[in-house]
Length: 615
Image (cartoon, rainbow, N blue to C red):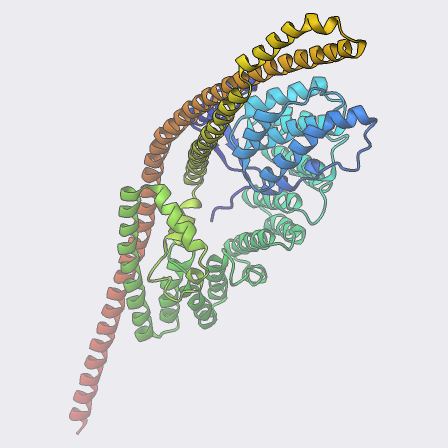
């Protein structure tokens, strides 16, 4: 049984970075010039870190400082919303295009936006870019907690690069002013470094400083238990660590799934050590409706079988028959049922069980072949979309024919359990998200261009109307008439002279306003032209990004189809092996029954002959 750690490493295609480079503003393009980097999926709970909490209670020194932070505060809130909704591309786009704060030293929200960009960029493997941002913050930030958060990121990158000594140094330097969640992550990563350095005692001490009842603590002790299980001859240390991990797990949906995996791993380890009672104690805590249920049921039955309680084991294995055959433990349970009946001496019932298993395996092989054909014909995105739609339908999980009609979503779950396939699928979905983003942007540009054209038409019409009102000849005629009357008015009364001066001021003002309006109308035409040029530029950029996305997606579709076909072929071979072994067991049972029948007939014949001789 494979016990998986909490981090998944994979390589991201360089075209992903080029596509992002096209989508994002060139204002910090140098940050995205890094070579291909590893993408690391650290625990999703980091999204909810209080490090991103709105610091609304912060005291702003004066009005000028408050105005300086207002834009970045609003930007931070919008970007934070996108980040919490897992829209990392939207987060990066927003921050790259509008991150305009001018004061890095006193502007807390500007620096928090940098931290947010680091977290979002990590999801796309932008480690070189993020490292440059962290180094930039080291020289400009006054807020110690923000600086420590940047150091925490540097420690995380060093850990993922396998530089455990350097990671421990950087993580230790980040501990001084981190918030509680930041400290938990730092101690968790330190424990992982110690485990890689084969220092479990130090790992335990680091985990002792993690907040109880958090995922950091639960995963930390889970990984420590795995280390003990693989390296310590005393299985009890691993089992104790598993118990601690289970006790640390939060009572959320994700936490309950993790707790199931913990109990399943502990029970399986106890089972391998022939400690059947301990195995039962762990396995009975695995939920019957969780993702680990089938594997737990199978191991639960094995524990009873180890105690020679085959009837109870058979009852347990029957409960696994409601799950799809791609789920670990289900295919094994069908054979185990027949084996249990055989051990109980119920050969006829065992034959029926083997016949049922053969039928189920045969249907699964045919269905697997159909899925392979669909994957190669339609592509992985179509299969993932179908699985997503099935997943949203609760009825698929409640269906009673899963074992004979495995749904696509169950096959996708099976494929996603493979690290390489999951990494490729993750990148493919990110690329597809970029492609959808580009298409949406092009649609928005079309709408904006239409609105702009209508506005330009309205302005042009209004300009024509104003031109008629602001006729140059009319104004010049008034001025000429005034000039003709001016000599006569100067010889008139004082009041008429004053009126002349008033008219002069009105005419000067009218002339100035006329010239100003002419300039404004010309500027309006120029403004519409500039906007149209910008639309054309953006359309070219998004079209180029869309074209590159299509090319890379096609490449990843090919890689995924190949890997998916390999996994499905492996599943097919595994089911075929169960199929052949079940048939062989049937043949052996039929042979045994035939031999027993022959021996019975021979015994009856001999008894009849003895009775006849006695007479």
